[in-house]
Length: 256
Image 1 (cartoon, one colour):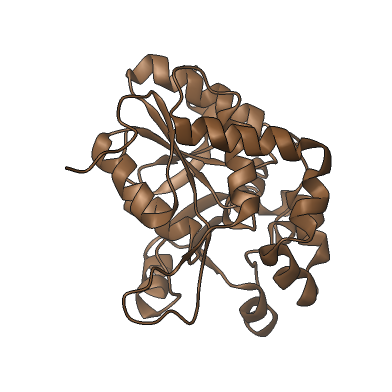
Image 2 (cartoon, rainbow, N blue to C red):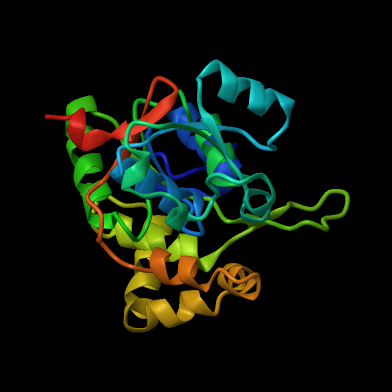
């Protein structure tokens, strides 16, 4: 028999398999991919852009989906230098993107979103909007009479061998999930409590820890120090992306 966190109202699950577990339970889902799908979507929605998530990779299917929605592709950082346009860097979005449509693929956040797209409500959270997304999720829990699963996406190992799991947990997503979980109401699973404990233990040095974690070091070594600094900021945005049909809009515009 497979045992999970079902007895509890608030849970935490990792990556794509965790997103599927939450979806099969019919939970409200909060996707957390700090560096940087979640931070990018929050920033884009804050600037009133419309974001259509699509599973990776950026191939002919993704480009056709963008054309069908009259939307622009959001490239990876390296591809954006070559192709022009917006990238997975949240700092590539601004108030100039008001009303514009974008298709965003990413290995982790977009993939998890696609898997969980049929849940009662799917929200995007990170450090930038932790309190705002928790507030909306608590309200939806009451309105929809549904439980909540927070999904830190993590990263992927690129050199797995046969039979190995390619999920590489990322502390930036775990701590971001902990900050959101700490503000959710209802009974919490032991896994959720431990995640909150990690956040509390790290709270005084959280920026330093994330700055030097593996995911951030990778970005910094590629010249994206400003992205890491930006994504570590706590509660600077009230935008709460919620998946409505096939695109993210601000839940504050949808929920009374």
